Image 1 (cartoon, helix red, strand yellow):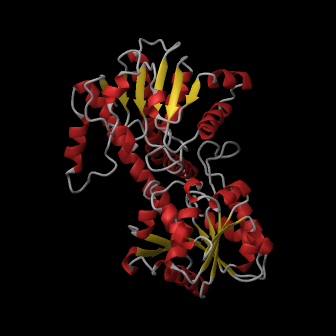
Image 2 (spheres, rainbow, N blue to C red; image 1 turned 60 degrees about the vertical axis):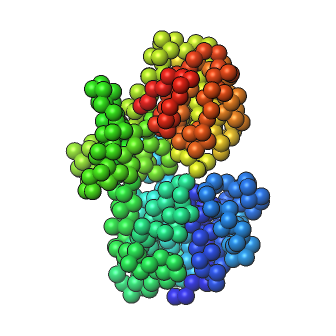
Image 3 (cartoon, rainbow, N blue to C red; image 1 turned 45 degrees about the vertical axis):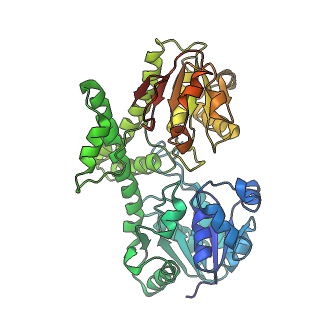
Length: 462
């Protein structure tokens, strides 16, 4: 099947950048990204300086393809109907209720997409799983499609994304690998070939891996679990280093020089965040428990526990330094996104550090170059509501939250400075200038180990 039109359902961190690059590399294919949120679509169609997803290089790609062969629309049914290939790039958060709550992936949006495709489709379709999904989700999608529409052939492929936010565009241009899982039937092989023909426009053939659907789905969970495991491992060692006077940076360097291990994801920090790592590991824990592999489940669950421990340990360092009394103390949090070069704050360590400090009575002054006040408030409110906090308690906590538009104002009269995100501009701070606007001599709590030296203030690193 020759693909002339692609529809991507979901205009988020995966759908937007991925479809932009496909449109750039495949100018003969019309690519339409659809979403039920009209504000999000309006933003994608608006000023390129204010698109919903901040990714270096994305603006430049959009300048070349938007309005030519890349379109953003709320016309979901029309786009589904005319496309030969449909990507599912909708959110799959962790379930909050029902069986598997707190661990299993919530497939509500995926199932809704499948039902809609089945209802609208009038011709054969290739359905591509782009969202991160648990093993054997394709089976559920096929069941929904076939139950709702028996006269059309649907081929379901697994094509997980392996993008790192902040480098998504460069990752798409030069992927380590493109993984495509499909059935071994003739129609399944033809569907795989159609997707391979798209990627081979710019990805070398040897980097396109073909597997069965189940291997492809599990590979995404396994990759993220392995990466998160490395972060939790080095963070666990950072706690030991503090007790033994070893230097975690030196230990990390020594470990990373072992060619069998390598240096990536071995930098001690306040903890990992983002939409994938925690969600995927919890999903893996649920799957292992579901198959009776309780010891394996607990092994992977420990990665999450260490991450939570590291966040709590960082906040406790601040509390202890301030004599266990944060009442009327101002604390500056530099960074809210879970990593630099992205405006994504999902599961950011900043949320949990701020929460602990606020519940100890501190006033939190926050600055992030790409995350605005509304997102900060939404992140905190979502956390507190999940814990059953009343509206009055939430309002009282928000009285002690101030979001600033520059780091200078966020540090006025501060008692402590906590660096949560490794934004480049924080590496360039002139601490002599900061000294003139702080009331005391606040300690810098370097949660990302990015400050080389500061003669003006003491530094504590995680």
